[in-house]
Amino acid sequence: MAQPKTLAGPESLDDIAMTAMEFGKLLMECGAASSIVDEYAERVATALGAESVDLRIGYASLAITVRAQGKGVARMRRVGPIGVNQRLDQAVRHLARRVEAGDVRVAEVRGELTRIVDGTPRHPGWFIDLAVGLACASFGRLLGVDWLAFGSVFAAATIGQSFRRMLIRRQVNVFIAATLVAFLASALSGLGSRLAGSTTVESAMTAAVLLLVPGVPSLNAQYDILNGRPTLGSARAVWVAVILIFITIGVWLGQMALGEGR
Image 1 (cartoon, rainbow, N blue to C red):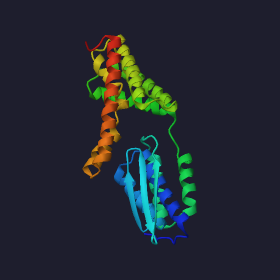
Image 2: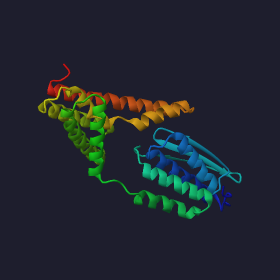
Image 3: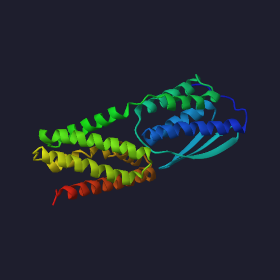
Image 4: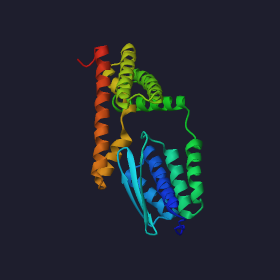
């Protein structure tokens, strides 16, 4: 492990706190578990010169206190929308290990983080839409959807994912967006399956909205509770439960529109 760097003054300690929180913020927004966020924020702060680090992880915020040479600084910041981005997650962790090894100076770290965020490649939107559609259709087969409905589920889920990305860009409330996407995808899947002569229309409508199921937040909620963070885990679990309720409402509206499920 790299030797802690000598602090020049209070500003340096403040920079350490803000830089460590930036690492934690990005990891949270990428979908990392709270234990990973805690670990890497502490590793970065220690490598940059902090002697002790206390990090508090909230549902949508981070608070950190760093101390060194008899001085201490406490800072807090907001965390943005949480998603899943494995490429960015791995890039941030790699930079943290470089900081720990002493390969990046304090003044360069923030610039490196900005470069990583801006330069990490992303898959094209159309590719994501098609991949999501194929995944939902494949899961549909596992759930018993017949081949006549397979194409309908694929098309409906693809359109639903595209619509979902558009709503995200327009910053529509996440719960309203879940309802709208669930309604659109389930209704299109049900209509297409019915026209194709499928006997598994209701299952097809359910399969088309699997793209909305918050799998990573669900696992993180359980993981947080089991690892001694019941407040954070409970907050995430409540968010997951509410999302599932709104997805159910969307599917129910789709069934009512097609006269299914009566």
